[in-house]
Length: 236
Length: 197
Ligand SMILES: [Fe+2]
Image (cartoon, rainbow over all chains, first blue to last red; front, top):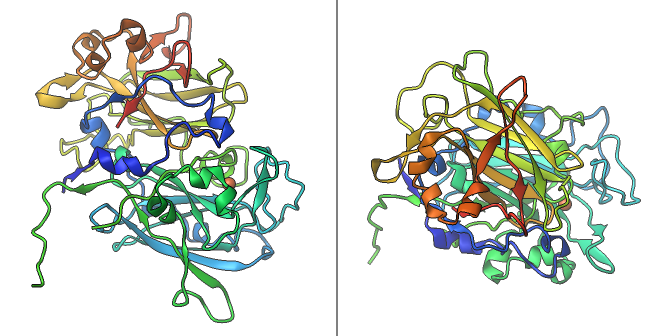
């Protein structure tokens, strides 16, 4: 099962330098990147799956003595390669702010309350069909110092490995219809609208649990295509 | 077929309690020590500083490394050569300290196959993440005391001597354990060579 990694697929990513996001100014290379052939060092990569997670890692509302405050939500979806084939048994690490928009991280100085019942870190592994699911609290928006009156739209951070070093992805999942989208340089650093919208989850009534929690679906597509594509079936 | 890949977004400033949670109550699943009791080869340390365009250490970066074992084999299905029972996974993750320092304990990787059947010199694949980086950067660590560097096909892609030197870790003198220094300069004077992978 060999995968190939077309370079043009990576054009969906933002540029390393984006004027609206001030911190990029001193943190991007100015020399052109050197085109790296995909050797064995690149088409391999860390393989982590079911052995590394525990069941409680996938429910961020059960990690403390009491229940966290906020809207309980269920986030689920599939991890796919570019051909739409599932990426099974791959680790997702997620982290987020609490319902008030505050992170547990020591450097977060936003004067919103911490929740003693919420850390905001989770891990989950995809099943044989690439599916994952975790339970959490809907994160709040939070201010940052990028520009005057700057607020991040609500988001959950995701980190994935996928099948190789080339499929490694760190991204953010957003919520549909967020009024802060037009003002957020990190979201808009993805300049292609269709690509940008692939970071926005959708509300889903089927995964919403009655009397319990809203469901949001977020499918993630990682780099990688089949090296020997099968003949496309024709209906006509 | 899909519409395209999910784009990258910055890791941001607040990843530590999930990805590198040594100072938090989250269980740590990855570490900066790649060694296992059964691994052979030469045990080494790799240390360095991550610096921004002003030469200031970046205190909220994360470095990941991926490497072969001392025999040059990767713990991955795409490498179909038989492996020993060392349990060596070849993956490590380290946060930077407030002044931008990182450190790994690992073993020297062996030579691995390269393009057109030519071997590659021992190297470690590196990814750099930080606030202010909208996507991660790839670079490689080579070792100054490896004669195979001269014939390495990837180093050969960087003809400029000074630029190539940014990919080569220096052996530090006077350390109890063999230690290599590899600084990562994101921008400016002595900027590290980064790859489009
Ligand atoms: Fe965030």
